[in-house]
Image 1 (cartoon, rainbow, N blue to C red):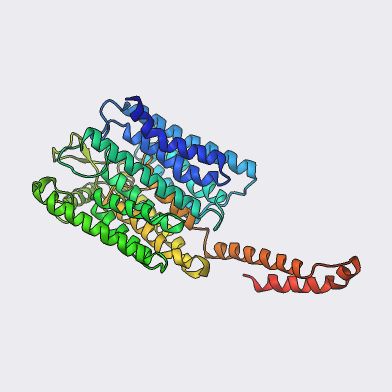
Image 2 (cartoon, rainbow, N blue to C red; image 1 turned 30 degrees about the vertical axis):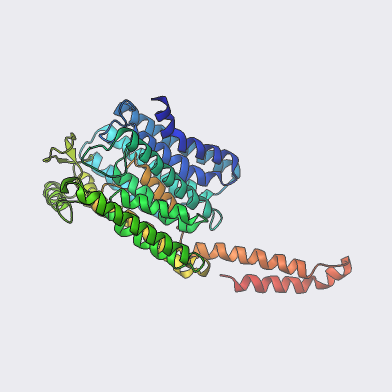
Length: 460
């Protein structure tokens, strides 16, 4: 139906309109237009979670994904050229380039196909958008609230879209009673968890945070529940002004979920209950063992292309299965060196968050950043989300929020703070020593120069 097509594209249109009319348009492009377009294409990919008769061929979807990355690149490049902003890539981009070079070496050494090379090129373009162009346009402490609010409201809108689709078309597969359709529940859960944690960086109503927390729980992703909800509960309770409201909201949510569990979920068969799994790791240990066996065949160069496992289960109609460990999957595909360098990308993101502890003005956001890095680390270890995924809008949103917090290094962040302090001090100095006459200004000129020099020497 045409209105369901419009429903999927609606978040991207709203954020695009906001980007055109707001002075912080780059932030809305990064955390609104960019991920929502990719998530819209994922919903149209014709998977088992898609809406019936609202889908496109997979070849068309892949071409449109490439078009989205190129479109965002041109938008950000034009914005940087119009503002005459010098490009300042984050240190993480260096590790990204090294990892992609290792992957390209594997493709060349194994005589891989052109499609794999083009995939690596688009991956480089995607990282260029986030860690170079957007990082140069979004200044330190300038637009922190804008990406946070955009991520929270994008996650809330996708949650309502998923609820509408499930109410109209039912769950898919029928035995999976999880919030997610028309997306994979794991993808939507990551978006909701990102929006929930990012909401603590900006002025987002407590009601929105509680709704996002409920959405994370209903999506029934144990990883996101174990990471996002404890961090969110701590961040909500630690604020004295919101402590009472947060405690009341958490108590109401716990009672509501307990009532649903007693009167509805407990009556369902064991195989269809949310959070019901065959084991603690849900069979991932078998996938990892099979992945290590494949890695032993070519540990240094890999296969030179994205490698998957043969599916042994018949629950879905898919022929291949992911390893559910992105470091192992990248090592199988492109060699151990590429897997280690992809791990360094994650460590570089974590080091940028750790640098926030040294800055008193943003130290309170260290816990939020730690939760966001834990999300991407958990999904790379136990899931299929990674910075190498070209069509995963959830990872774009998560990396965009981390990038808005992560600066070149602690010295760069301190230098930005120093410039702010210097500007305020010099303005106060000018206001205090406002001359009444030309002669008075000439008499105080040497003194002003000495005071300005002392201010500059005292700053880092």
